[in-house]
Amino acid sequence: MRKDDVLRLIDAIHRERGVDREILFHALEEALSLSVRKKLDVEEGYEVIVNRKDGSTRVIGPDGDADGGVELPSAEELGRIAAQTFKQVFMQKIREAERDKVFAEYADLVGTIVAVKVEKQEGPLLFLSLPDGQEAILPRGERVQSERLHIGDRIRVLVKDIVKRGSRVEIVVSRKSKDFIEKLFAVEIPEIADGNMKIMKIARDPGYRTKVAVYSPDENIDVVGACLGVRGSRIRNVNDELRNEKIDIIEWSGSLEELVVNALKPAKDIMAEHVFPDEEANSVFVLVPEDQKPLAIGMGGRNVRLASEIVGWGIDLKTPTEYEQELLAEGNTEDLPEKSPEESSSDDDLTEEV
Image (cartoon, rainbow, N blue to C red; front, side, top):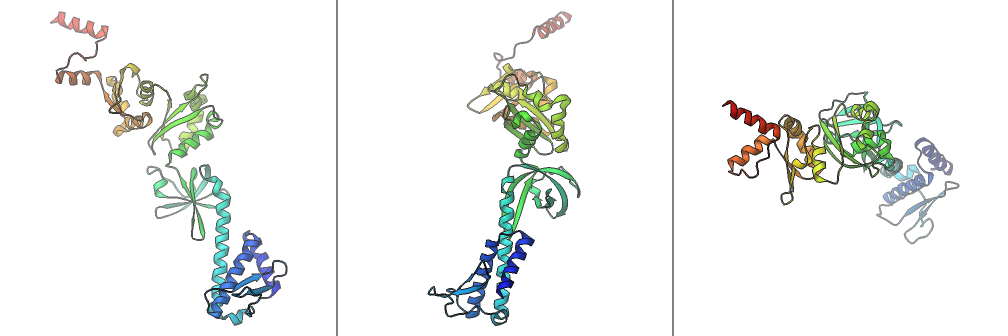
């Protein structure tokens, strides 16, 4: 290869692929060195050096002598196998350099939300394109199983990881992660983005229901109202992105009893004094109104399960009637819940009628 050809080759690849010239020179030197050793049928000891200014080459021999008694062979002299080795090694090094360049460019995206377009599906993988055309992958394990995505859909995803695979870089994204919810809230709710509010915990059943516990050290901030926004505008943006996944905003509390009451929403009329912790069992027993128990449990037990995840304790729900029957069955009448004046009056009227 002539000196001018070397420089033209380096410049052409640099312009076309955006790979740093010094990386290309190193790749060329490694490929030429391997080809020379292949031609001489030796494992090591001969290194090719390329002059960065004029493109000239020289061979360093085993003893460190310039040229080492060997001149760089021409393409014809190298032979087919050595020439093929040169081409394979050089192209591999270029691909690795491109991979490292892409990896460095996108490494800072991990943990952020990006807008993408669904391009195609191959088996369990969805291939997406970022705004600059770079490809991202949404694996089946990072998808919401109840969500139906179609070619051409524009969605937002969380960049979960960037990994090197051979000469390629894979940008792995997620819509299933709890971190996706946290980042969405930070995008839509300025008080969270600026640190005036903090997400304490997230419990999620992807595609169905998510509970987000929020807290602010500023007592003047209505954390639930801030998340909802005017006429629900803020939470609606999050909800639209999640394809109508139900979202419960929970006010975090340092009181276990209050936190349990908040976490069991949308169930209402549960009182903090009806929450009884069992520290040894790391669980709480909760008395809930008869008409609120289905809501507190949720479809398939989803609501109480997510509430338990938020609280970090097991939650056992009973109505007053169920609790009373349980105590009577055990012969324990001392712990029966006291009846309200209305209930006592009703019982007295019933006795008089009889």
